[in-house]
Image 1: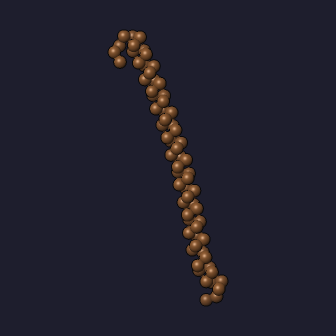
Image 2: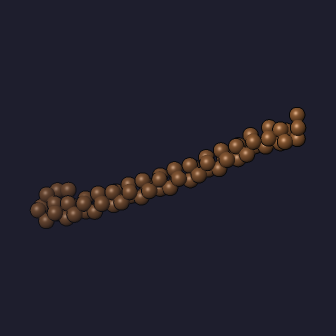
Image 3: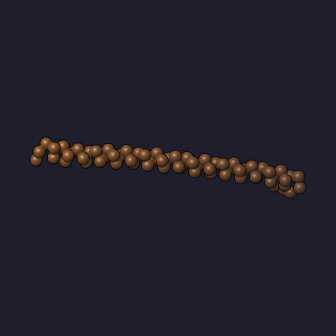
Amino acid sequence: MTNAQLYFAIGLPSVLALVNIGITLALFLHLGQRILAVEQRLNDLTGAINELDKRLTKVEIKLGIQP
């Protein structure tokens, strides 16, 4: 076995492992960003529902309906 073959046999799996770690890290970061985006949308929706509830409560009070 020549030195080049030895370097190739040891180096290639090491490089591929590092590439795999880098890709996995990038995917996790992207997933985290998408989760934050969904969380923001849910917060916006919750705020809109709360605002609608406040408006309906005011209408019920003006109409004399018990909320």
